[in-house]
Length: 72
Image (tube, rainbow, N blue to C red):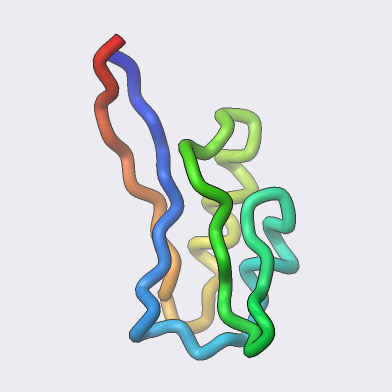
């Protein structure tokens, strides 16, 4: 088994400030109203430090990094 990381957004908490997309344009883009749209799939390992920063810097704590086990 290996570990995968996935970025998730709590759409109820999110207020559309867009800081996450500024910090992590590789994985997050904004819709027409400023709310995040996440790239599907697991987070590439080399982006994990940037993802962690985006998670920590979200002013309303609306994004999170989830870890899951994947069978190979």
